[in-house]
Length: 197
Length: 197
Image (tube, rainbow over all chains, first blue to last red; front, side, top):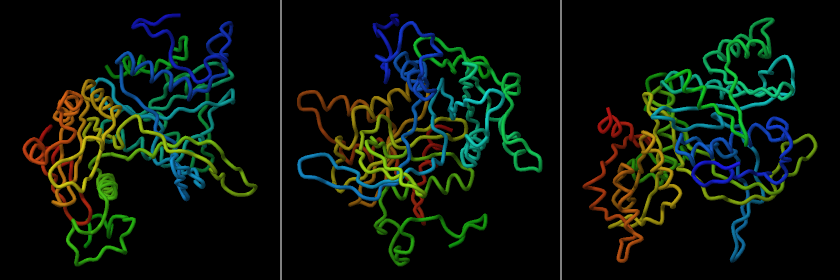
């Protein structure tokens, strides 16, 4: 399959392991890999500029061997203070987090962290576009949910008898299914166009 | 010194080592520390949402000891594919890199990388605001230089006899000095206001 622009395929981490007879959604790619490939596609085709932020790491010990690269010998994973993805589309600031679940009927809220929600609230307050991408692996469906629809559910979980998850049906009703197409394009910009432009 | 809002001071990494008799610019803080403190101040005071991206690291080996946190035992520094800072101000996307030099008369271009310049060109193309913050430590001056003023100088360095640095005088003429004030505020948003709003 050829793209315009002479690019044969997107650079894919495990591209050789993809069985061409498999359907798109059965390739065993993670949502993160798909979104990284999508962002690469968007960048190459001048659609938008979205990057994943590096994993935050607390570096404790570094060796500097002679004549070779510095080696980090001790470091720890830190909790991110923002979402994983942000960038620019047609002059607008976009910010999102992407998560997948094996659950069939609901998406557990513990997939997000309090400071990520706080960050998305800050983004909305300053007139940016914040959202989450949620994939139900069992249903092979990927959804766009505007952050403003997530906030009340998030806040409600702390009340007595507050739900600790988002029902799949809520996401079907209040979110938008993201069109996906080979290879690995999770075409969330189409949803942004539909909602904001 | 008290801030409104009940916050006594910004959280500062080496705050106890700051000698109160020293002038602001002599505190021995790096530009990065000052900008991180500035961004924290901006966030706390609801001015804008700008974060530094984590240092990109290629993780090779991780230990998972029982009953304690995962330890990264081997990792390497990777070159960043974007600038270090980005975020949102009044609905606009901001993106910048910050660098300081001990040079007195010019700023060496090797402080930037080709892909960072490419990234800033992408940002400008998609209607974001891209710029660099340059500090001359010897002069105790910090400047804002719009990325569009940097691009021609960057591209020209590859020509025969192209300069490999930006003269201090060019930055004085074409940039804008960033107002700085205690503690550690490098008030670049003031310059954004002046230029874009």
